[in-house]
Image (tube, rainbow, N blue to C red; front, top):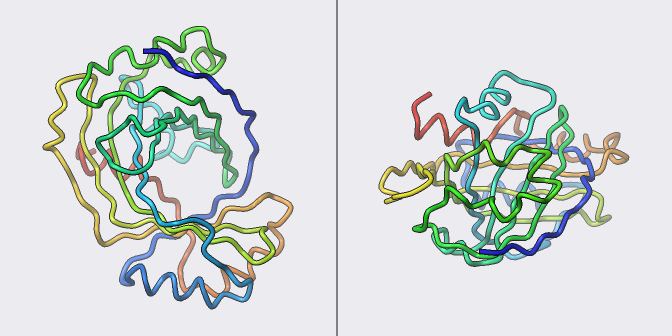
Length: 229
């Protein structure tokens, strides 16, 4: 299996998350639509799927739980059918520095979730990203899937996403049956994303939202749900 490699330089931006319970998605979207910065749909609603990777000690998980300022998440992402990873998957290294986030990406060839995933990164051995993030030491530990709606402000400075209908599956290197599944139909995640030069005006958005900003990680939530940490 060969990969088409495309390396992108990280661009840091603010990523502010809000955990929402007690409201349905239509009610959250209505609050976004009446915001003073005038948000509009920017992309059609779609399903996002991720396989998360970690080392034997779950180091990335613990770094997030313990609140490390600098941390990473390693995942493969694709859109559409959760069990069809042939749909233009990408390897993403999600980099967090406090509230700032970025990612580095590699475009991958499609693969089958039923195949042996133990050598998934072997074709990348000579790449910068493989060596920098020690991809030889990580294994798949979690599959998740959720729906996302996209909005952009009228001045194009701020983006909002709303995630719902979350599902988590246990996954390993091989022999995956995906029978170990946890659904979360109650929690919604609203996230505001913008470049750091627009941070002074973000209160025009947040002051009109009846939610508190919170630390929230789908990876951590999934590990907690599936592995009962």
